[in-house]
Length: 50
Image 1 (tube, rainbow, N blue to C red):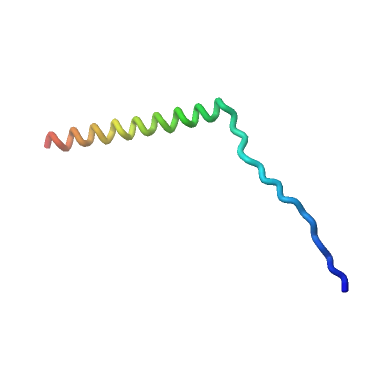
Image 2 (tube, rainbow, N blue to C red):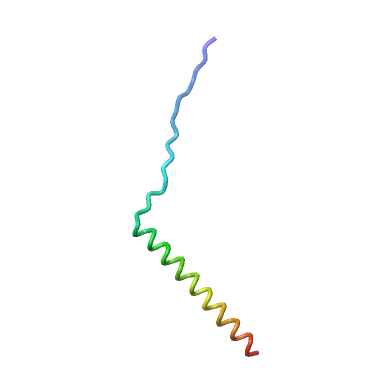
């Protein structure tokens, strides 16, 4: 009986993100959160006037 084996390797690469890209992503996320908060605050003020 002949057994044929297929050998292979799996290479898992992580996303290599440098510090500048991480800082930019964090700044963008923080900006969007602040804008959403400001928008929600504005909407709440508008509703309270009605």
